[in-house]
Length: 93
Image (cartoon, rainbow, N blue to C red; front, side, top):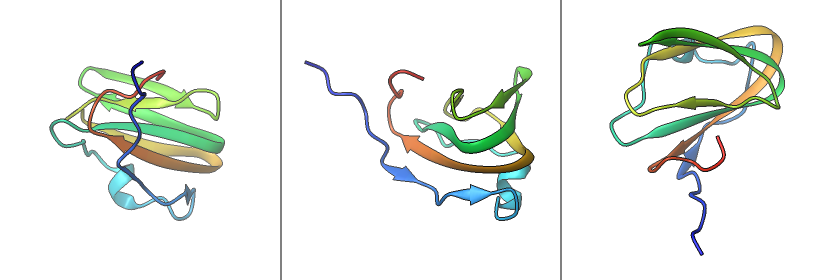
């Protein structure tokens, strides 16, 4: 039976005030690294740059970042979020 991948690292929980400027600006994950953005409370806009698209993340709607995929996030009012990092594609996202 296959075991679902677990994150090898997670960020602290950020809110609309503590969300680092680096996450609000264009950035990407390293080669071989997947990110899963988990909104704990509120809403967060995830903007992908290549190809361009946007999605609003909520506690019920996770955001998947592919390796080396340029993106940035923008709070939509009060929110809390965390990013989990995986070294293989996460299951169920």
